Image (cartoon, rainbow, N blue to C red):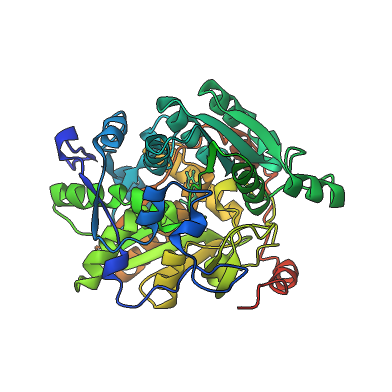
Length: 450
Ligand SMILES: *Cc1c(COP(=O)(O)O)cnc(C)c1O
């Protein structure tokens, strides 16, 4: 009988996050100030982020200690389990061994509190009273709401309008943890009002919601802004996933040949994969695959260049794979994957050939999610189902070639708040939105000239 679960004792929970920056075999392009076109100074970011997070953003330390206050909250759900997906393997009749790290056991149901708790902690430490943020599908907003609640900070969430109405229970969850939630674009900010004037029916986008949350933070002395993905410090906080997974794969007596994660802004993918990229830098043979939606394909169809992180051009310029900051992705159900850009660290690794990327349309993704639910029991988030789609295709490829491939993926969250999307899939009403070539070409015309 195969062992299904590999559980780490709390005492073995990693004490450090892994910072990949000093190990990169190339130099990371700097973050650029949009006005001066010079690299930003740490001080430029001080109005929106606490100093400790700014330091982490550019740190050259390979390991950064997780503060005991953060570890204490992590312990509510960490270490998360590593499972071997034996039933899925049987269903696929594959010689591959499939393992998954399950981040859906956190209270809000995804990997996002790994960084939310850390960010709330550092803000509290520096005397901040209130945090603003954006949220797509609501996972980030709920993670930050919970974290703010633990550290007694106020929290205001600008929620992408299409998700606000598609996922009403996510809003309820944020409100249970004490946050204030508004649909974005909202009349509460200049950025929101401007979009509403142009298009009162705007479904919103992460880029718009970021503009609103940043503007709000800039306007108030007691307030800072918090971002749930993309930036180096966010990816750093997520590496506890991969560090735990390395220990758990040791317990299983295997090492992955392939590591797979879905990518929106890149944080859960970085979380599971960067500790394995470190092993790859040291010479281990391992493939690392990022999976994105065909309707928002920043890595597979985007351009590697400097772009804004938001529509209102309030953020610094980041060198990343981008579809253009004005690109508003179709309203797919994997709301967490609707971002025009990709984390600079993930982008650079892709550009230098250390990781691969694939894209799938949403019906193929939901098909994979349902197969997973019917074999492994867990109903996956639509975002995570992108990874599952790629895992199934890897396992079938291994079967065709007769290889005993070891596959590890990050099951970044559960899908209990996405059941209306599953409803649509099961009743045959889910549409595919293929690559919106014209809209992307249009948006790419507005790239900043650097
Ligand atoms: C937010 C989210 C994602 C996408 O964001 P990343 O920063 O790319 O990880 C993926 N899965 C789940 C469950 C999410 O909540």
